[in-house]
Length: 458
Image 1 (cartoon, rainbow, N blue to C red):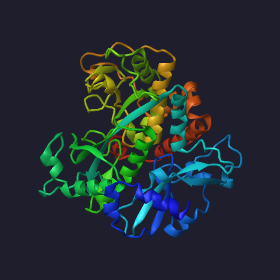
Image 2: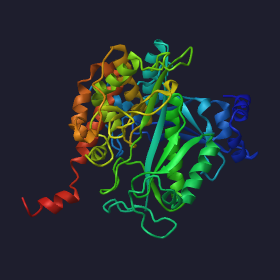
Image 3: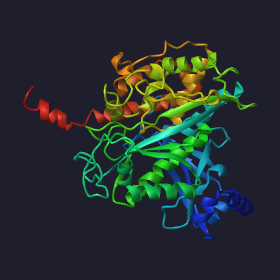
Image 4: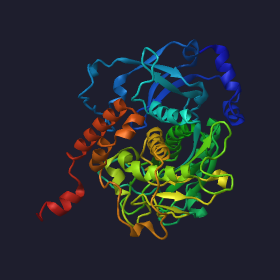
């Protein structure tokens, strides 16, 4: 990194970034990566040190850490706890504002390699890039558009207490089942305003913001684009939304099911594939009809998504979403303009023909969820698979076919050799170890339900 390079970088930022910068000198740079959970980890340094381009390192152990902060033991990894260094290299295209900080700060996502310059296979961003390399060899380019659902809640200081919706501007407790209500969105106007301001400062364009079905549940739709760029945006947005909420004395949570009597939060992913040379959607023929590749992609999702379900629903809480009649799919049927199916085909032109994956939880790591979903579709296309017949009617009346628990999903992940090849064996071994460790930790906790119903009755 040189001073000239940084100057050129800032000149290329969107106008909204420069409005935020307003001629101020940048004080510090946050050098960050996403860990397995999608948490930002890294180092903060003065801008002048970043400009000097000194080599930066992080220990391999950041990828062994579970969501609770403990570490997973890897049976087949030698010298796991020597904590060898990984090399961080800034991806300058990701440099953007951290507009909530007291200082004038940039945040920059970094690529992670070993000291020989080879990508570290356990880094989630590298896992997604590995999957995209398979598409690149075929001359294909995936296009995705995530939808982000989350709740604004009262600050939950004591984790033994249930989570409650945040009180809005009316001073009344917000009630659920008000999907698409404009007044419900207005309840949280100051938080929404800050989310917009933070997005503009970072150069991101929000497509739409709506009230979802839960009390205090918001959905933000993003513009479609390159999978790595969109995963980066989701990574940034999660952080930005949390910071916007904290400014107004509330929490933003991306838990899949934070409240017992409210619907869960999903990260629906719209997916299409274009020819890299022409930009033509390979899901559509010249006459506008659907191609065999389109049906193959759907079939691949039906066949392989159950085997990577632990990457789309990564925690014990994730499986509380998938209950019949509670707004989340319970199987991988597909249908045209059918929101009860796990795979929905939205109404669109032939150039915009796409598959919406509706089973992904908002608690996912966006890099890993996109990698798992796109890998499944790729295998379906290259193996010339055929999907089941499109469903007409409500999918909730069909059989529950998705895994019902994290341990069950991990058992299916164990058996999925084709997906393992695409994601990388090193990553898959690590992911299984982390998730089994988290499951074991959860089993040590006695829940209120157990005390309530088992203490005196069994």
